[in-house]
Image (cartoon, rainbow, N blue to C red; front, side, top):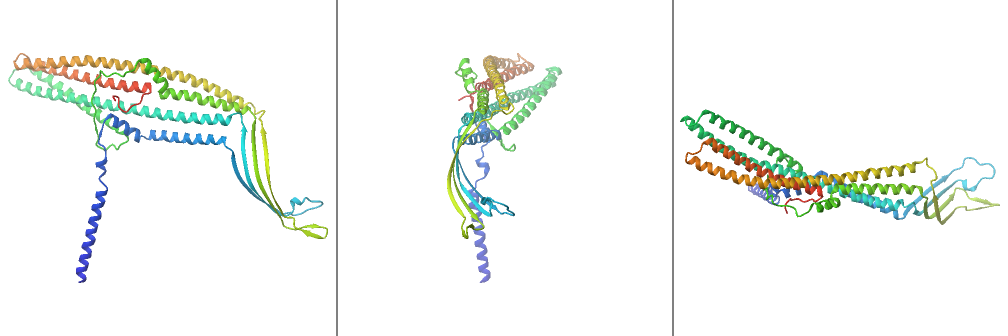
Length: 458
């Protein structure tokens, strides 16, 4: 009986263990199933903005500025302080008429004090306004970090997309060259073509293979860069999807509207403007040092005095211990009349800093105009180039069809077909390059004008 009972107990434990493992596996699906593996440009940008340490650092700076604004706001409110002291006096020697306040005693004092600054040259008000401006400044810094990272991800994604599209063209061209090469070798064996034609085709095949290899390596490099910007593990297998879009798309903005938008929204310009305003507040705070400071304090105090010995009055003793509660009101006035010129030079320093930052603001505005003009010009040029490349592509395709028809009728040669396909490959490559250049110029234009978007085409 004991043996059968042991067997049943072991079987029950094994069944419970299997059930527990099954439930645990069902409750926690594999991480790979929840992991996104296909990314568009918008997905890449959103992943980068969500995971980038530089964005997290910018958010921490914003929260820090919010706390500093709260600290500056506290300067408008009164301060309430609780205090308490214990003083113990023990005399060693006394001659003549001695003050009874220094007899052996223990004194306890405690109370509350309420203090409020009434006037300080508007430094508290200006300090609060400076904290508000500092908060706006770090918000602009965060927006600048977001814009820079967005543009960096977009341009890297487009560089990779360009290489992927070109690789398709190069591989198709290589396959065509290899097919033609085998045909030429067969024709050379029958003395139908010269050996120089075979060597020429082999050289073109070697060049095409090198181009394919370089493009594949470039794609791998850009993939690593993109994963680094997105902050995903490099070993993760990701698929990036994106198509070249119609280069006829043009933002519905005039150049004047783009400039006006940049002056209002470009993070670098906003940072320069806020920098000037911050130093202007520093100047106002420095000027406040020349003003008097007036403060008011109200306190409630309780005093307990315990003498070690009783007092004498004639031939009788009496208890000298006492306690009392009282209030104190004090109006304090303070004015620094001379400090070696420190406050004066502090004001002069801020004035020179304001001038420096105003010049920097003008430089940022000029830089914005330059980048806008450059990006807009590049966009229009790439758009025009795409139209010409499309025309060239149609002609190249028509030429390949004509050469193919003539070759089937023995009116053309294999080298002519190789040349026609090479021109077709060049036309396809030019069109892809022009279309990608349009997108990259648009990304740069968006950054220059302060317009941040995850996808270039909505």
